[in-house]
Length: 502
Image (cartoon, rainbow, N blue to C red):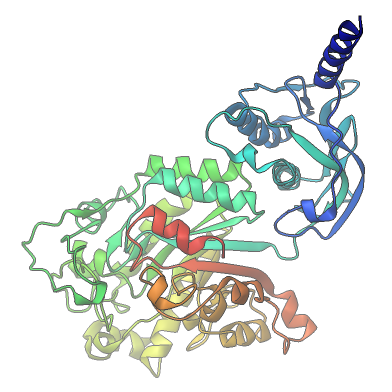
């Protein structure tokens, strides 16, 4: 008789245990949300996801945000969680539109039976979902089905909003080309960390990476170089013009549309960079008449310095070419900002070129620095006529900058200080803290990098607002950005290593 009682009791424990909510108790040290929310309050109790949990949505934007987490549960647990348009009694996540919440901000309230995400826009709802992902057990990120996981999160109240409107990462795909699947994967990681800008460095000396239908040679010629990947970047010879070029690749316009749409679904804006007047040997190799010397050149296989094969500033045909290119680019990228590079132009050919000398005389320009200013100002007028904003590296300040242009300060913070003082918007991206092609640790233990030492702790100290800025200057700081130049980065795994955890 005693044995029967024991068996009945044991079975009761098993039965009721399987149907009772997990009673895990959380401490603040269990919560790992990156970036750290502005306000977080831990409460008693928890919410447990199960196969009957639903998302109560009112529109497509809320449904799209919910889908991020639905997809994760499908992979990690095999559940196909549903969205509904009628409010359930319990066990659901609901979205509420609140006009009192700032752009991209959100409030997250987790209670025993219901989770509420409040926001005023898609990005806010998305960030609320990303925070839920980070509150869940790490197994939610598994790429295969996980058994025996309790999908429990603590009851919390979180109120969060971004401090800056530009939270970016630049990826260089010219020096080494990466497939669109990796670009999309990187965009996923940005969204996960509530970053909203992907700066796409599509053009440089060593490769032209975007299809331009009016100028097919840009990808037929400019997207390919002689394969010297077995040699150090700065130890590669200058190829002969007739050598077969096999290393490279490019994105078709359909690829670009797919990447931009995917980024939009993750709350990320893709900002294209179309370099000018320098870092364009790949374009000169395709169309030599764009340069001052009009001399055929190969696409460089590796390091190139100084950069003298640049666009001729004296020919109107140069500007016609660039306007045609940017017209196609702007049709593909709806971003407010169009990046034109503007850095590291060695202007020795401009000094000798009859076209450039005539331009300087006609425009009453005293130096080639002022000629570069003319070049950028002329492109700024074109870009602004299309309702966009020109942004470039801080060299575009030299010789004077068009009033509507914005500056990306990379040579320390000096460019940002100068630009903001002149009333220009700036993105702070100093090489000291934001160049992820630098070493993360001791050189002898790290994969090859460009140089410099930028460990996680140093990146973490970065603040886009410089102490010496006035209150008015600080208002012009759009935000900050990390840059990953790819001279030494040949694989996706190396790229990921350089980006994360920094």
